[in-house]
Image 1: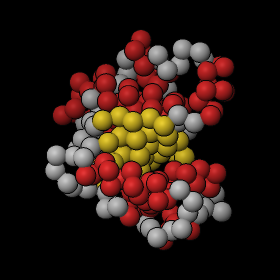
Image 2: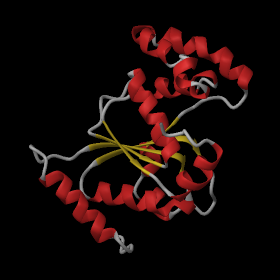
Image 3: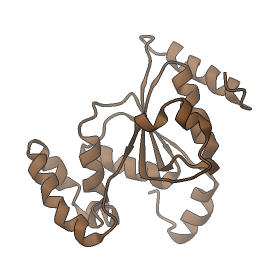
Image 4: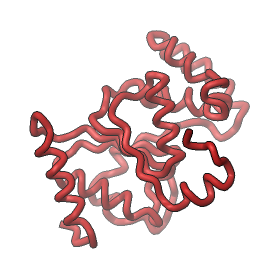
Length: 193
């Protein structure tokens, strides 16, 4: 439908995934990216729109919106903004800390899980920055996904932490890109262990 190069391969892969399952049904897919929409990451947009074309239910999770005036027209045409959930963490650290007790007050039923998101020994910076807490607040209301697909290793690492803490459910797939092997591992060699 979109005439993008390589789309036929994506469609074939989607059909194989559905046909090999015990029950043929659309999949609930969580797509995790750093920013959305990112004009420089058309491969993510192509994948999302191809999965939607195949009848799958795709929910997009992004750390923050990218206000790109050149955003691809497929984002608007396919109503993708209605499928996006952003972390919603205040940039200002004081406001971030002062808002955290409100999350605990609203989410008393999930108190143990939210406390796990603050485990600094396990989650280090993801916990101390309150990133885990704010993401858990966005994720806890979603029933488990069939597939959690993360673009870029650092995003996959975050999603693995969310699953481990109990804020996210589903089978995890991570697509590593060039920057994952070059810049990320140069800075932190044990990042993905």
